[in-house]
Amino acid sequence: MARPDDPARATTPQDTASRTAWFERHGPTPVTEIPAHWPEAYRKVVQARIDLIEANKDIRLIERPEYKRRWSTEPWEKREAAALRNWLLDAAEREELWFEERDGFTVPRPLTINQLADELRHDDDVQAVAELYAADHLGKRDASLATVLAAVIEAEHVPYLAALRYKDSGLRKRAQWEQVWEQQREEDRTGKRLDIKVPPKYTGADFLKHSYWSHRGKLDVPKERFISYPGASLESDTSLLLGWAGWNHRDQADALVGLVRSRVEDGGWEKKDPRLVPLLAGLREVLPWVHQWHGEYDEEWEGNPAEEFQAALESGRADAELSENDLVAWRPEKKTRGRQKKSE
Image 1 (tube, one colour):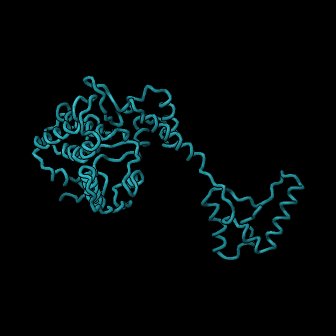
Image 2 (spheres, one colour):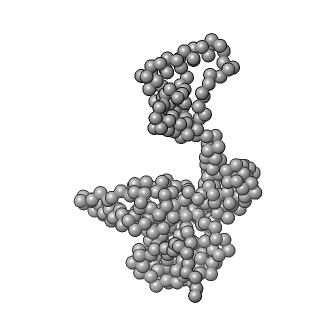
Image 3 (cartoon, rainbow, N blue to C red):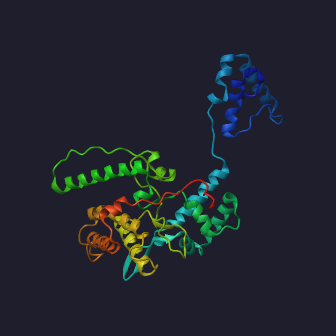
């Protein structure tokens, strides 16, 4: 048994700091005395080992905690929180939640966090897990299901639109990636090999939030659970609007077209409402992939999805009197920092 706090083993402040830092970092309590309840024969063996360590500087060196197998594990509270959070996220990702039947077709259904909570509140297991998570890990025993879902989903979504994901540096890289994708599509169409340059990889500094970076990485590969639509909620329910990251590109485009239509027809938004611009910009971004993967007649769809969504984009742009450059150039308003000046 090593005795990391033995004065004979540390004679400088650096040694003392080294002795205690390992225990502070990993959480275990150092054992400084041989437990009295151990059998006497075993206590003698341990004492002999301690004496040998203290007498031999070479052995003393390799017996220091930093050179031993750590056997460190995450605290139970942290593991429990992760298990409860992942269980709730799996429940919120159930496929049937994110589709609905409309006019004889199965269509994607965006949901606000409040609506998602309404869909899940009759599930006793969801309620029980949410209550446990709220009490033990949010410190809010009486938190609503919507509050719990908002907390667990907070770091599990990525916005649908590039301008809502990246800083300016990331948007410049995104533009280069889009050029490469178009060149690759041209190669597929013509069979002619092009000299395509490798686009730059992303870094954490290119994203507006660390959670976006953690889900996308240097190649911007989606690994998030949910798509978010900031600013697209109605005044009657301002909780974050979400989509399912399991939607394919056709579903994503369908969801955006549906949002634009519902906001105008049911939400009271004017056709020139500025809040529609990012939704149309998002439709523009996803359309190249819809053309690539869903650009032919679809019997289930009873038409060509890409052509229909392209027409919807052109119609939305015409109604809002927007050019394609207007959609490309759209940026969210930057939040101001600091105290507001007092009016004189």
